[in-house]
Image (cartoon, rainbow, N blue to C red; front, top):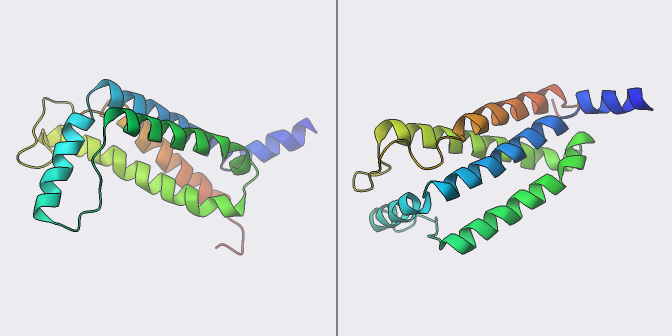
Length: 155
């Protein structure tokens, strides 16, 4: 029974999913502690003024934090399904990995630039930058594990 448990852990994307969930939790804490919304909200308003169709909302701190905590809790609750290689979770896992990779790259790019849009500048590093390497590594790891655990039907 223990051998089956070890094989299940090593032949799934569960650990990679868990790592990305934990990196996302750390990232939310990083953003909350470094004033992310003070950069995000003005950026959204500037982009919306230029492109009326831009779909991103602005947030108050409380609703933003509660929303991200709920999302993190749901993702963490899905971890057992990742360990079971649930096919229904795979599209969400690919999406999660892609979004978190872009998120980490964005924070890194904005740190290098020192601004998001020309009128929204900040002292470096960008809010949320410190946890970005964890997002980058964990999202690539999840992507690799998803590719390694796909079945012949998925290939």
